[in-house]
Length: 465
Image: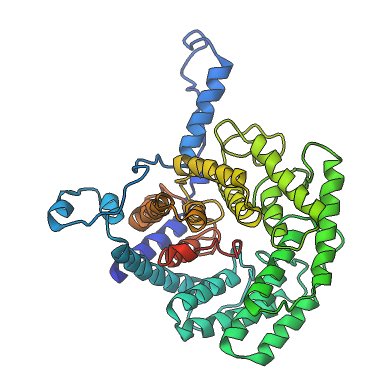
């Protein structure tokens, strides 16, 4: 296994060196210049647009040729010999055996990520954020520590967070995934696990000193919802609510007020804008904001606004079952955590948990069908890749206990386990603009594999708490 991942490491380095990028290839074929006007068939704009959409979507994901569901069975040596396809063979393994494969692969990948993003003696932190920076590697190490109880991982995680603490001083970014709040929050939790009361006090003090700019947006990656997510992470892992509910309440008030103002008594109770667009997805829009608000103590009318906003989204999804990236968008292309059905599905699962409404569960299951059919993306990461889309099935499995969702999570994860390294090295799969990062690269795949060891406890990294 280690030889296999060393080969993968070399292939990935070659991939990066050559700057392979599927996104640089034209998404749509051009009409050949050699055809004269008289040679060309009569144009049908509707059929052309339909064909273009189908070709563009095909460029985004691999066809899912795996069975919709297969119950786990015991594979004997005779039947194993008849299996020719390596993916089918991996997917057919008993879960205990498969779990050990995920474990070994995850730890090998983790070591590669640490080597490339940190090195042996540490590196000067240029990008401190959890999304694509050093804090993402620290977050992966913290996850590895939770799974293996290896204190070396915890110690290295703490070292990385300290470097991120220094690098993020003075930053105006205040959120969990892309800002200083993430540094302080993870630092405090790691300090608690390390038994370092002085360091715990330091990070909590630093967190409480974070000031939110008045012009802060409301979305998850860079806005108020992202700050509240850091508060929820701290309160969950530190215990006894170390942060004043007065402060979080003030931020909730600002988010609700802004959402109602932009909605302006329209059919959707809450609406938000980021860079001129009213986004719907988890990263910048309604799904992410509603997800965070459900962790807060809401007033009865605010609860109804959150429910009403989710019902508006369900009512206005595409006929395909996918969700628009923004209000009024007619482009049914993106099936990502950041934009589209996967991020919305995770929010709907949470709504079903919080509110106990069957309509939200059914909508989540419907969104999951979109992910199953169109979510085997030609990218590896959690933000917009197969790793992130796998968490839709893990989330549904955690909520329902239905083994069909576990099978589908296993199928997507096995696709990565069996094929990702070759597809990336061949240029058929995008390894991420930051190929070792948590949200775009193989750091997220390593995190997923660690979660596949105990799938009933799996949570989308830095989002599902």
